[in-house]
Length: 289
Image (cartoon, rainbow, N blue to C red; front, side, top):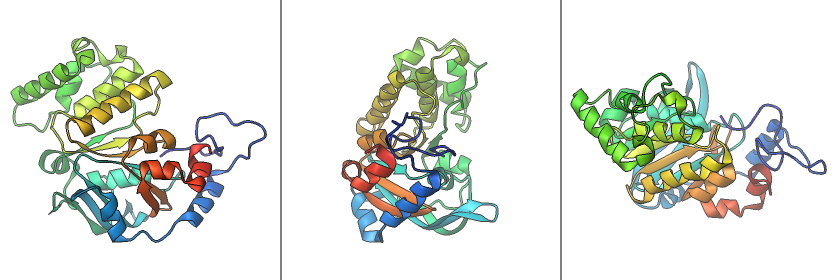
């Protein structure tokens, strides 16, 4: 989840706050964010999808064990589009990604890809049969394995090691920066290179949908732009559909076609990313304005 447990200032999590600015606690942000929400209709969600929806969730109620985190949550996004989820700490943003990929308990509602109901599929089935890949938060590489071996792990569901090797070769051809390190252990990679490896590993199965959990987390500022440039290419050149959670709400909304604001497991606000950037209340709560 994004944010922190101590309180966040107008600059957002991880940024210094001048002494004369008011610091809002996580609870205050949640309360005020809930107040700005309105009734987001199904028609509006489809409109914001940017075309015929490739991925949808409809009235999703999901959580962990007996705990329900998401409440009647609906989402729609077309092929080759990007969606960024923002909101206060504990709003359920990562739970959306977990639910789409099959990591949570689905109490009710449906998840579809290309019109096919994939709600009950396991994560392996989502990856191999439904074209959904999950790019985990930082530190998901295997440090004692080489770059190539890490990539091959992304193809563990392919019918043969030869096919996984061919897929890894295609990824290395696409990203020369990784190719130069192919035989080296992942432990020697920079933070930006590790993130590139995590993204690249998810491409081995050639998914249509990429679920991206906190792409900038743990990265030095100089690597963040590089990672978002890679994601932009995947969307705009390769036609991938991206659903992301991003701790840097400003960066995420600048990047994404559409933004959703989640509060307490429900969709409180939705609009074009650039439009939400200009929203005064969204800016005050999440963007440092």
